[in-house]
Image (cartoon, rainbow, N blue to C red; front, top):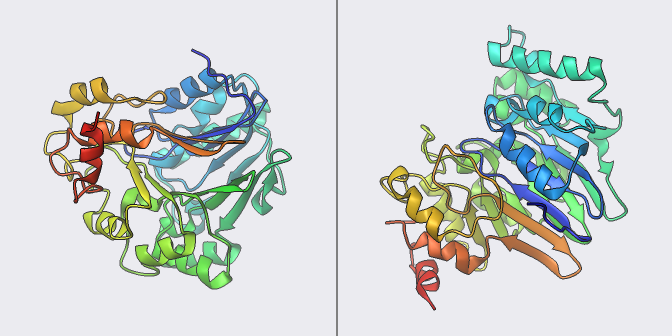
Length: 340
């Protein structure tokens, strides 16, 4: 069913399991933006674009070449009839002086095919930022060429991940890709303006020991909302409980939303999926691979300001079903969810 978008900007962090996929629809147009999509989850993005009436992309971004960010991007572009006007991607693995693996070779071959066929057109000024409309701009904050060289030397591919901001009508959404503490340290030392209303937290809520801490990052960004893309079945224990504890310690004025619930919050996410779906007010398509918590999170920016879906009380009704939700150690959200 199509969504009437009026003159608002819509940006969604999609529930794609363990991976990142962010899509946007520009006000009053059939034009969208794509940032990342994991392998096997392209249909989630395509379905939402169809619901929003988006037929082409003004910009597609691959923040870095890990398969849980890059593997489905080509398939999304292929399934949009209008193609893609601008494209941004730093060939991070080619800096490492060794033969890329099969997944990366498939990605490069797919992108090459799109370029040859004209479905993607590389814009030379993309990395300096893109003015998408009178009120909407994308800014690329990281990495610089020096960061790419350093990332190659350190053999740390997440160090090369793109960090970018979407600015619209005085509001900002900051997308952290998989950049770790070292990347955020470089952003701080360069004096980049990282303040934002909404932060898509880097690396699925994990945090390395080196570089800036999660507390440093929150102090830099000062977000009202922190979104975490994570899969119920992920084998790495994301999001890191210490990271969540530090976020929760910042106070209830900052809202935290994960796309899916993991074993940190409930011992059997798969066993509770049916109950969650019955209770949830899911805003958009989702992956079939895990149990949603916030599910697909939609940010709407318009004349009425910034709105987040699911709304707090609807999300709280889902939280009541989990045995030990990391974002609600005090029980405040569960009390809200039980309120009539």
